[in-house]
Amino acid sequence: DGGFEVFGPGGPTDVRYGNGDGIGEWDVFGTDPDNEVFLLKSTYSEGPLTFNPHSGNYALDITGAGNTGFDAGIEQTIATEVDGWYNLVFWLGNASSDTNPYMTIYLNPSTVASEPPPVPNFVAMNMDTTPNFVNWKRFSYNFQATSANTTIRFFNRTVGDNYAGLDDLAVYAVPEPATWAMM
Image 1 (tube, rainbow, N blue to C red):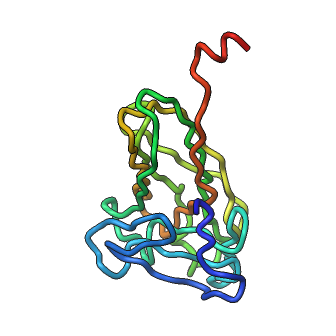
Image 2 (image 1 turned 180 degrees about the horizontal axis):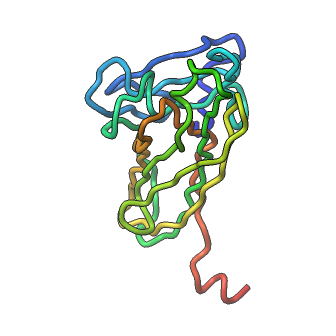
Image 3 (image 1 turned 120 degrees about the vertical axis):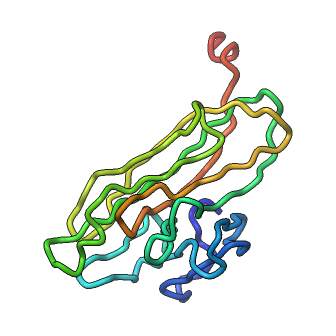
C-alpha cells in the first residue's frame, strides 16, 4: 500500500512506528524501537500547520517524531523479473510554516534517498513551500532488476527539519527499450 491507507476514515490521527514494525506491506528499519517513522492523518496539525497527505487520509513522515536520523526508513521486497525494467514513482512532501517561532522546525527542505537507485546514492529533495501546509512533489526514475526479488528502500536524509512526507509510492514494469523502438 504505497498510499499508507492502513486505517479507515475513523482511524487514529498519528501513529509512531519503530524498528521492525510493519505498516501495511512496508517494514520499518532503524535503531529506535519506538520512533522511526510517523504516520499522519489528514486531520493532524501543529499550530497553524496542517499535515495534508498527497491523496487519501494518511501520509508517512519518514523523519519520525523529532527527526530520528539517517538510519531510519521503510522497505518492501517485491517480485521482479531479472533484467526487467521498472519505474519507481513517489511523492515527497515538504512542510512549511508561517513565521510563528514555534514552527521553525519546518523551515528546511525534505530529503530522502531511495534504493534501488538508477545511480548510486539517488537523493530526492523537495524545497517547494506552501505556508502552513505540506507541498507535494513527484519523483520518478527507472531501474533494472538484478534478481527475482527487489527490495525498495527509502531512507531519511532530511537535515535540521522534522518532516519529510512520503505518499503514493508505486512501482510499474516498463517495456524494454527494444519494444519502445518498435512502437
